[in-house]
Image 1 (cartoon, rainbow, N blue to C red):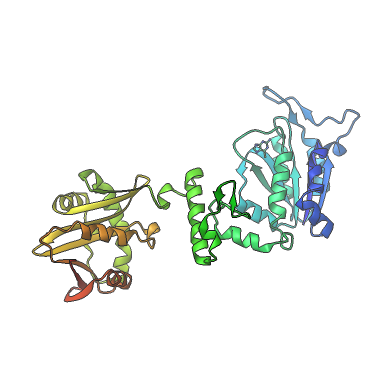
Image 2 (cartoon, rainbow, N blue to C red):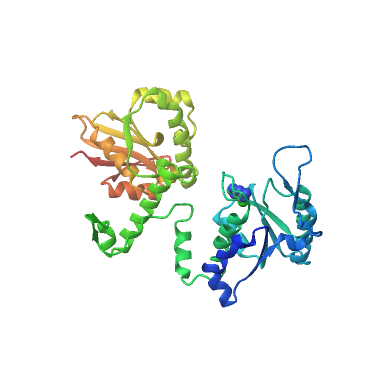
Length: 382
Ligand code: 6GU
């Protein structure tokens, strides 16, 4: 990969000689050249800026030096990617770093002052493909720091560049989440212990702990990346009230679609009910709702039918299934059975193999009674 960086402060980019990128340059994988924009200015004053048309504060970078610089550096075959660091660009992401790491040639045009004449940006798009990129929602004095940051993020992704390719694989493993905390020796330092799971050598347990930690951090610090409801703990189990009806309706519609797919010929009531239906059964059943971070993530209902404690509508939000929430809701429902109940009873689709397996594990057995593709399961109380 070749990178050309144009700036009126080329010294600002000296760290590129030292850092990781410096090593890659020595190995020949990477060629970086820093240019002074003033090489492309005419006249004795070597001016690069002028006052803005329409008035306003500050100065604008003149088009002519930038056009000359781009014409000298951008490859004529259109294969160069031109990066314009600017606070009004699209936010820089790891995905963009990956995309740029696949390019053979990058040209950074580092603006200063109030920016570069807009016509240069239009002209650049005729010479190559242009990305206007911002580091974040704050203002720097120029694009140099962004060019450094983007270069470092891109160069470490160039194949063969990073010494330890495994680190890159590992990173993508937790894609979309912040990093989990890391520890090294000693195991006890100033009274603080390394989390015991990391000392145990159980790799599955370590992986689960790391994912949990990454999720927790992400939910706390970057709820835009992981909703707090994805984290265990801080849960609230309550008896349902009429005000839960709307969310219950939404959740049950989401939860029974896969049931319908597994049992195509069965008519599934939770998929056909409306808000009034849900309100009605809320008054006729004991209903538990489970919330995480305020979000309704699960529910179950139960009522006495003769001596059977009939349990139904066991539901868990699709993105949170497989974490044991359904099992716990079932336990809550069972624990709420009144003294008269001698058995727990529930019904599921004959084609719902996952449900059948889960209920079997929870001690339920087929009770023969099968109607319209449904099976009844029971388990004695106590
Ligand atoms: Cl890329 N340039 C400038 N001048 N300020 C910024 C930025 C870039 N990203 C965030 N702030």
